Length: 231
Image 1 (cartoon, rainbow, N blue to C red):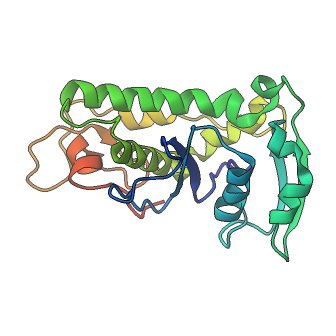
Image 2: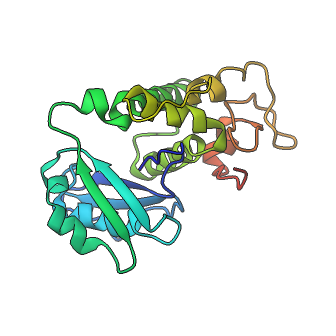
């Protein structure tokens, strides 16, 4: 969920495919504070999951009660009655759908955000494969933590101009301020930097967009989960 002021929603909604449609009780998923993780028989969202997303990620106390929702023309998003049934009392919500076959032109996430997000994940997984081959990113819980940590980086105040540009590129705003993409900022100047953790012998893997520290892969996602409280 991307707001026009260049901020992301407090939580992202993640759907993972499981043969039974449920996570095995013997393999619990991690409790990531910025994710709502659900299982399905496929990774594709259903109408019930849309309602779950609305209730767990959109209509929550940390999100404004007056919303203009610009959503695409996925069939469930066109069912305004079902969406309105999920709106709690006290909210003022206006719903508008982007016309079919125009998402690449006027859907802000599709036109600007998705590419940098995929690029960041590609760099993240490539580093893991080369330098930490025993750390299996494709393992379910590791993948969940990767998404949580990357979403935490993208949500930083540092990237508000980058996120706002999604709205300018699609014609909804005139605002523009120069920016670095998350990959440029986080991976661009880490060569030969030491990890910030005391006595850690490793070189940095990433520069945190929030606390501005240089952090090695182990202290970012393996030994620690770097969800710092800086904005």
